[in-house]
Length: 317
Image (cartoon, rainbow, N blue to C red; front, side, top):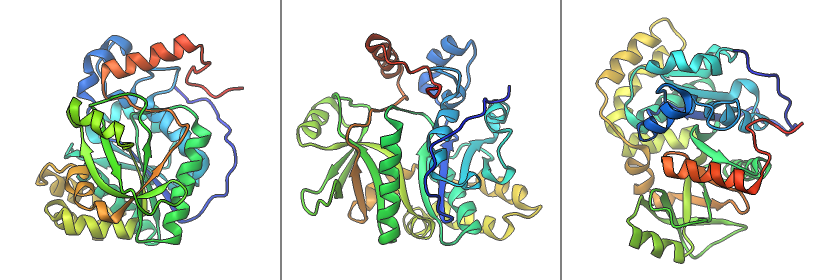
């Protein structure tokens, strides 16, 4: 089915600003809920949980005002193409990056960065997970633009967007900022905490730590350099893909390389090991939720209905 035509607020676009929408996950934790909601199992990013658009379409439409159309790249799993088609069939072919198989977030992000860097070695890149629910989208885009401005001024920086917690969610990743050096909401990162237990969650909450949104901005050159250093088990084999990008052999080589890659999680293998190289930008007055848990999704839907918010998943007239 064709997507409705949309108009967006106009912002100043930058030729070297790119985005990567991460849509290659399996979404197994929501499988039962999705089957109830959609009548069949499919990865959650291809489901219209609220309104008529899928989570993937929500993500693409949310960030569209920030980028030139051919600078929005979407990474998908080859096994999901029959679901992805309705969301992506109108997009330029080069903007769809197909992972031959699921090798976790490390390989998916690496492959996407290789494509972007090949197209534009001066690229500044933002990563956007496709399974997050965000209200106050204008403010969210404001913070993304600020992160780009910071990286443009200091290309060695990598900026992650964090949000002040609204509850004691133990299923989230947390960012502990350094107490020193704050400049207009941007602070150094002291440590990452991946899904701490209840006791540690309360401690992090009380210390003013932030939820990790995994929205991240950095230059493609900086990110690839760090991945080669800290994720060599996948970065070195993937070097073989670079010379064949854009050629007839691209799919063949990518398939072969991916078949031999280990499972590597981007956050654990890289971000948790380089906190001193990262900065966190706190997003105030933006409601953000990672829809990876059925209880969390149901709570958000009930809250929207209870508060009578006119959020149907479609832009206001």
